[in-house]
Amino acid sequence: GSSSTISREEVVREDDPTNNVPDTVFGKIGLQLHNRKSHPLGILKNAIYSYFDETFPGVFHKVDNLLPIVSVKANFDDVLTPPDHVSRSYNDTYYVTADTVLRCHTSAHQAELLRQGLTHFLVTGDVYRRDAIDATHYPVFHQMEGLRVFTQQEWEAAGMDGTALAAQELKKTLEGLARHLFGDVQMRWVDTYFPFTDPSYELEIFFQGKWMEVLGCGVTEQQILCNNGCAGTTAWAFGLGLERLAMVLFDIPDIRLFWSNDSRFTSQFKSGQLGTKFKSFSKYPPCYKDISFWISDEFSENNLCEIVRGIAGDLVEEVVLIDEFTNPKKGKTSHCYRIAYRSMERSLTDDEINALQAEVRQQVESKLKITLR
Ligand code: PHE
Image (cartoon, rainbow, N blue to C red; front, side, top):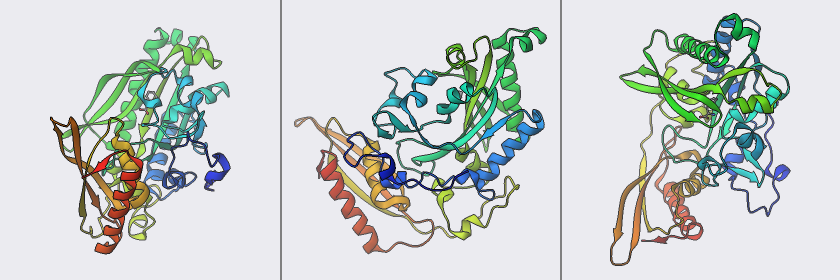
């Protein structure tokens, strides 16, 4: 796989007004954390590969170096995302140009791999979503997609219809995967909706006293199979988020740590060792700064978070709305956000934080059509 990063100039015209990808996010393209053998994400990916190799020897094809810049068609249309679905909005997705995005899920590769004739595959990669800022959300994370096609011969041999066989094998396979990763855990299936599967489910496991969502999956929509050279078959598909599982399996408290090059983080994990418990190196104190402003109708929290991240990068730990009120006479609404600044690696000086906060105030005022209070 390639490990080179991509420069923005290679893919975006300087003046393209459609582009909403900040440099901090663009800079993550090509890092391929999931392909580092001693990184928690690489260790987890390989543990999932081992499970599939043991359960279906020699059958699943593995793909882990596809470029995250994909067409709008591949990311949305090919997996039947409705034209008005929120995930298509500029508020939720990074558009590189009017018709290319940073993939928001690995499902973006289902159709092309089916067209290549693959019937059993696992696709791992970095995915991108505009979102809030806290310990479990980061604009880039990693997913693994699995898809497996069944032929008519297979369901007839099983004496079942094609959808029933796919649903049954899907559940059995993913329950086995959860046990492979977590040991003897309690699990439950929850019905849900995805545009690309029917029926659709989420798998939850009972972990540290709570039900935790582990993955989304379902029986692939016939239209996707028909459109991509697999008429007359059925299939199951799943997609799982690697960070959220790795945070639990390795006890990693903050999602930013996955991006750390600090050896106090990277040296704690060894290839092939799933579930080593991370020992926090001293947690430096956070510093909180509040910012209050009158919002306009166009205000979006994701846009605020993007500005903060653009300025503070990984020094921002959380942005939380702590107060909100409407002045009935003026009909205006005020929001107060508390920004937590903290480095994972060192202590920050007052001067440094004050400079960041001053820049945040200035950019929020100039870019967001709000009025600072
Ligand atoms: N793409 C879905 C997500 O990102 C996960 C999924 C994949 C669900 C495949 C069903 C089938 O949430």
